[in-house]
Length: 353
Image 1 (cartoon, rainbow, N blue to C red):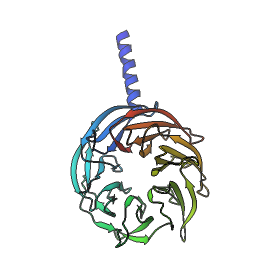
Image 2: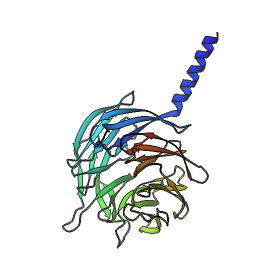
Image 3: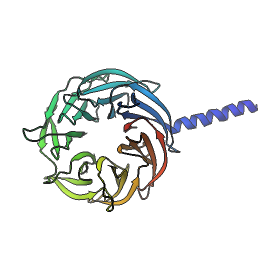
Image 4: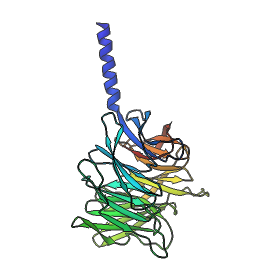
């Protein structure tokens, strides 16, 4: 009887532990010890990372993205040749290669899918272009249906990220200091707004976050060490805020990287490579303005991409140069971060729940 009871307790403990664990994939650079895309288990109760394993061998999968149903995963191969690949997620969580197509530009650095999972957009940093790909039901990438080249005779483009939002497509061009707005018309995207903000300086817009209603867009500037806040109005776009991501006392070099809103959209987070920190902002949901409330050291070097876990209680940072992922708890009332732990992972660049 005691043996049966002990066995039952073990089953319950195991089931509870498994229920708390969610898979997280990691995109990397493979110039060092990394071999491709990795998979870990993340405990949504304790904030612990475990069970690091290679999900698939592939070259420089620096940015990865899910299909909406999470049956497929897509990755750029950030190389001068430039390609983008699709993978099927197997029952054991490992990845199975489906196909690969050209990114139509050198140095692809970002990929995003639309809500329906029927299109992907890839940003080519070195090539200065963006490509749109139709996706088949079996997850296969088809050849690009549209290619946008932003290079001019006397100016070099560095397309860095893109997002679909309803019938809009936004593309951030770090080289041209612009964020383009496209509209979907007859299954093709047409340029609607050459840039949603204007600047005479060189901030270098890199990534951006959009509120769920599409009214506000927050752009993190790689060169400027700043966030540009934009409101979408009936007549177009207007800048409502511009805030530094750095401490006033910091004097070293810095390159901003990633930006995300909290699940409740009350807080905004941005990563600083150089200061090696996450800048935390409180957000006014009515007028969209933000106020810096914390600078949290990342407990690592060169924070690239970061993400918020599915529960909204934890923020995880990929520290590229120190080869570790740092885990922070998020205070639900203040949005501030507290360091919990870290895990060693080879050259982490992109984190995906």
